[in-house]
View 1: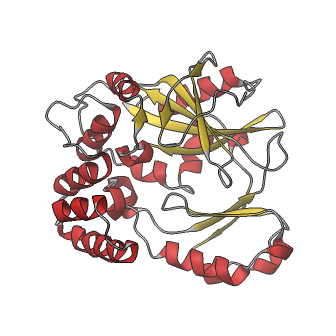
View 2: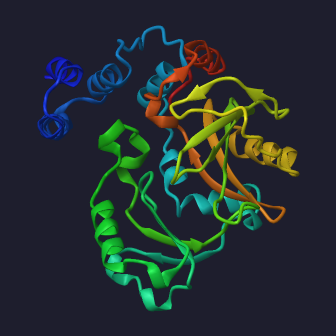
Length: 306
């Protein structure tokens, strides 16, 4: 069925029909073992076969790690609520974004008691956030509908990122923050390899024209992109506390073959964002491809699975 889906995608089939067929494939895919599903999804998105016997690129090694590096603590680390304990004990509570509430159910949220600005996040997935800059303009009914939909999802099934499989679905409410722009909060994503920071990805203009600039640890611009375009004309100021950020990332990542440690920086303060073990689920395109090969060379396999 995957072969037919790829052919259809390249053809001129009506978009609605394509979505129906794709949805059918995704529903049937729950019957597939992890390795078969991972190989199929990799080929669908990147147009090439996945080599798990001799993986070389970053994306190939991310898929290998999904299957072979299954440390039980990863489940707590991808949980956006549970990870706060690890962060607090490892680098300190002051790096945590202030928490306004924790909810096991959408119905438990008392919207009348929330501040005018806040951020709601589901703890068991990715990209399931509600950012409220003005509660008077918020469509609460629509927000409830989104949250209820997200709470029913298990993100494990979408990329076979196994740590998500047993994360308890919850919602957290965090303090709303912006950076020096006054209207957004840039994300500093630090790619660590065996505890060593190597690449910093800065995401900006997420809700208008999402771009990512890449830098080395000396804040030199890297002429490459991962999934979203980069822009050398956009001069992103080096954070004043970059060295602190890198050291914190190193501390959080020290025991793992690869993890991306995300931070925010605002008003001279560093705040922890999240830990990501499988960036882009290992299916984002690199330009040039050689950059993905370079990043792959920094992950040394095999890693003993525990």
